[in-house]
Length: 85
Image 1 (tube, one colour):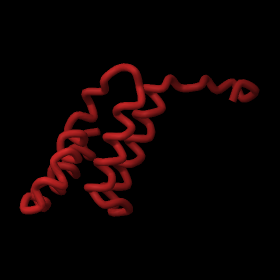
Image 2 (image 1 turned 180 degrees about the vertical axis):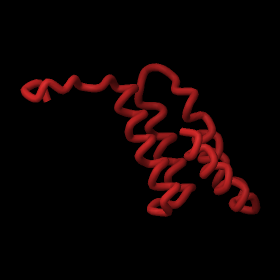
Image 3 (image 1 turned 90 degrees about the horizontal axis):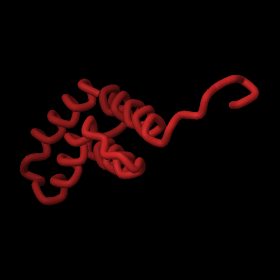
Image 4 (image 1 turned 60 degrees about the vertical axis):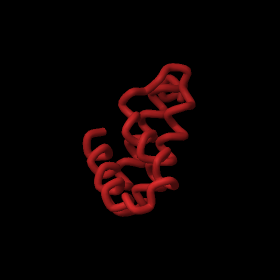
């Protein structure tokens, strides 16, 4: 990357780039909303600073297993969060 003059992203920037990629996969249908939310949750804990932009994914992923009756609502909320990201 140095040879190409490309600056290495910070840990936070890299996590956000990956989170946006996962969000695009959710929106395109390439990834299930629940799986994508859980993956973004994992990304949100990597940087040393909290990433509030990912809070919706963390919330819905943490509630997923406990509330199967709400899965349709949760999927819709995850897709909305993916669009917002």
